[in-house]
Length: 475
Image (tube, rainbow, N blue to C red; front, side, top):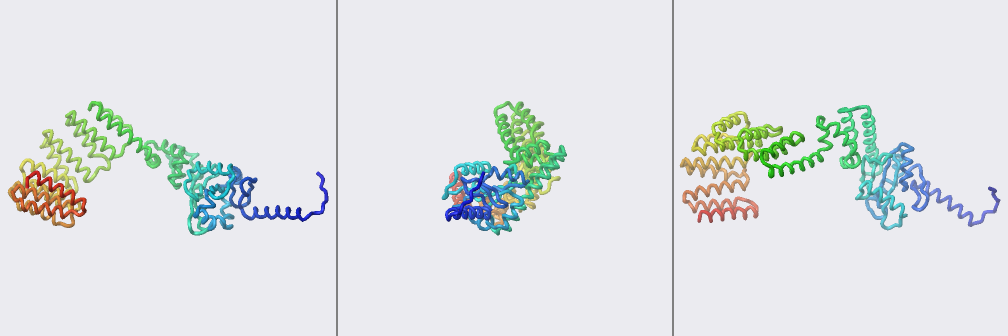
């Protein structure tokens, strides 16, 4: 090619100046040129050409920041641009670690259709539903953190992004170490690799690692299966329990019990789930009238891990009542006495023993049980009311009507007890008075019960109860 020497005209000089100035502005801005032109790279700054940026990240062994923004309409996006992204110091530092990609979603400015399509694809890939969002990912575009607008200036934001990058560095170091390990050691390293990354990111972008951890700890010996697959396991158990309930209703009891036992052996149900399953099994055993099987199931429930305190006492009481109902009262009382001796604060057990004694006319002995439980019942108003009511009934049965009423009055006047329970004590008092034909005093107690409850809704419900009671007794 030959060059011809010509004298430059004013137009050619202007064109040359325009090219020089345009090139200089592009270089200084740190951003790629507008859509529709060929996109180039600068030493620092954002580009809109995602494929080329990813190639650069791979070549330079850098991570990637994908900025999803609405540059011409989104207020926090504009604040982030002004306070952080436009700062040269920020861009200089962050570009040492990340390649920066801008994915814009303008509403008031034209945009090249191909660029809009590219941005939409990345938005779908990362589930973007708010702006601004920064996705921090490795060069394979696997994310390790998300960020949005945060006040505090560019230095604060720089620290945030640099700190987030440590998650990826730790992740890769642990994954590299895991390659040389097997079994439990590998499971622990895989767990450490992803544990500090946000749960919502892990669940979507790290499923293979989660699956491997769960497979390596299939018996949950390390607690990792429950940690990483707890939700999925819970959902699976929920489906299985629905099937078990259906089988317990439609199958013959013996076959249903056998099937339940087989399923329980295969799956790791929680104590709460096992209690529910064993209750279905108990109902089936009662249909078979098999006392030994019923006792065995209740023993399984009573001795389940995590079943303690009041829950355990209630299950023992259930076993006691079933034993009494099947004609084994002496054995039931022996079990009850042994359980009371071992338990701390055996309120439900003493209430049950008192009820059994009262049912056989042993009122004084029953009151001894109630009094023993009342000493430890201040923190449990519900059972305290049950004990007071049971004691009042024993006193009334012993012709100590005033003693019975006094017990109920003391409870109803104890303002540390819930208002609805105090109202119940007043209704109990009213029933005793009506039995004594003291109708006027009974009505006064009933009116006090209505006044004692606090909310309008509770008062209306209490009024309905009182009305039904008066209709029943005719006064």
